Picture 1 (tube, rainbow, N blue to C red):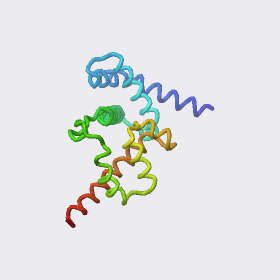
Picture 2 (picture 1 turned 30 degrees about the vertical axis):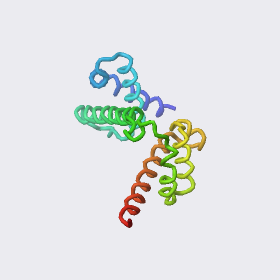
Picture 3 (picture 1 turned 135 degrees about the horizontal axis):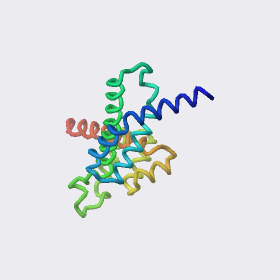
Picture 4 (picture 1 turned 90 degrees about the vertical axis):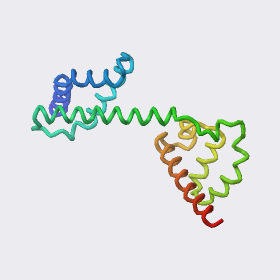
Length: 167
């Protein structure tokens, strides 16, 4: 019990020592938006708590500061990637009024290289399900859905390239 309390105290002291640095980095990254800054500070605190075991116990103040900066930037870049994935614009191909069904035959030809799991995910994507809905239906994490989607795109691109080379 005393060891657990000591870990909490160490983390609290770390946060107190670097709260100004964390606040400034979060404020700068949020563009001065108070609500977003508060969200970022919470994410950074969670990340620092999660990775606290990676900080050497006898680290100097400068090493500690660099460690905090590194994890802040890691949170920011992860958040930026997540935001660009969620708000990624549709291809021009999908902006047209032409339905996906017209391309379904081509997609089915290319989908022969997919596993049944990937094929199921592709069907849900084609039927307009969101990543969150797919994750819920397939009982997996949303991040896993995104990874599977990327794997599907890579496999189908390779199959398409093979198909065009043989023609």
